[in-house]
Length: 121
Image (tube, rainbow, N blue to C red; front, side):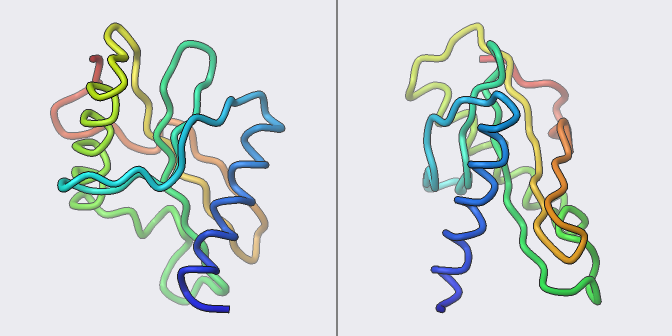
């Protein structure tokens, strides 16, 4: 399996996991010139932008620990582009991480708040 195929499989697992928790799937692999969002979900009225990380072992840290400040900023910029494109004005935005690894699936809601604070479109 290629790296891309592994990534897609991990994202599919994360999507199914979140749907079982009551989230509604909206989009996957949303790309903008500013960055990419792995999954876009809806949790009630909140738009949730999900970064999916998979680790076979934890030698270099758990998946969620690898979402750096730089990556967070790129996700936030891509999320704002998505929200504006979909005209999601008035929606609250949230940034979650789903980590797949030796410990199973870990969902970290509100995994980070971008530097400028909470984002609302």
